[in-house]
Length: 186
Image 1 (cartoon, helix red, strand yellow):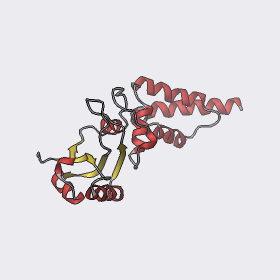
Image 2: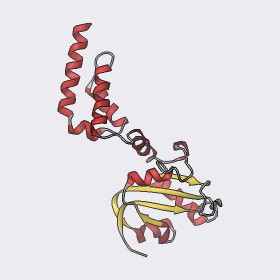
Image 3: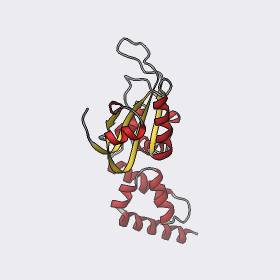
Image 4: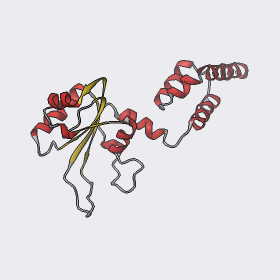
């Protein structure tokens, strides 16, 4: 087994049949930012139902050795995998954009990283121009005075903070222009 350090891990657990996995899952829920889902509708190449298992994605502020995390969780190292892309790992939980596999619902995902998955799904297929267009449309169609604070929260809720941050001076001018128009009309 390869030894590696990472801030993000993908973990495969069988908590319904292994008590150590059940304990590991409970430990993760208490100590890490995570998203988890039970896959109980997956099928193998022969079309037979695979045994129920739980996929978990965790994120932590500091890198940790996979061997240390496995020991901390009380499971074998082979249940841990390096998570190269947090977004892709979260999408895999529900088999997002993979029609060849059973489609799980967002409601089946548990954990505080579920919000990140929701934002990923909201922005699926949108390029930078699409996102900017959506934000400009929001400003221009806003009824009444728009506070920068409210617009900032709106951007955060859609997972578009990066777009806002990169063009914040332009958005500020658009909001100012919008608010000036609102004052003139009233």
